[in-house]
Image (cartoon, rainbow, N blue to C red; front, side):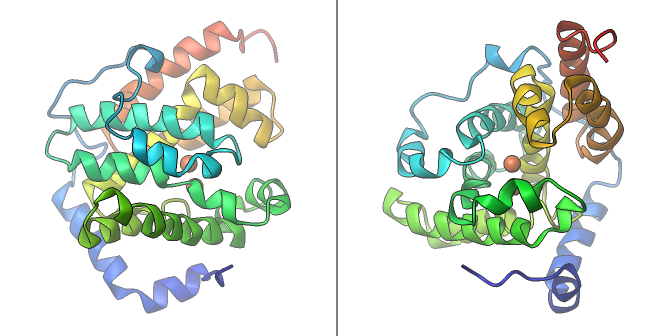
Length: 245
Ligand SMILES: [Fe+2]
Ligand SMILES: [Fe+2]
């Protein structure tokens, strides 16, 4: 298991990180970032992720999908990622898709007993196990992608997105931003609420309140804001959270 970096150590040692964040902020000064392409706010089940193209990659990480609900979280996040790529057609869609599919596979290679005890409690974003799952996710990417024909340069771009997806506060590129938004959007769907509310030991009303108060402001793109708002309206009505609280 890798030794986790601390946030302070990362800030001090990685000047390139700050430069990439500044470049991205300068390139997209309007936030949320307006969408040049179509924004689909229909229920995500109506547009599942594209069939077959990534099936070999899915097969190579089946073991990793069996931890922490990844077999629910990752496919739904990928479907949102594909939607976001249609809204932001200038982004490298293949990079976004592969990074999203793999981003949480590292959870399968950390101490499972610590996922809930540390990963979702207290100041969970800064928990050491969060850094560990990012590093382990990069290891998974470097293990499975070469055999599927992905170029070394592409694999390192995937890893640059996976590394820091939870613990780095800012995005470094549009592809990074779209992966981050996809990783949050799945929680607004009813399946995401059903699963993720149990991780945080919250009832659905408390959890959807938290989505509105804490997760919506973190969304980077306007398309993600539109999708989140539509899903939150649907999910809270369906689950009667105004009444069952
Ligand atoms: Fe993660
Ligand atoms: Fe995730």
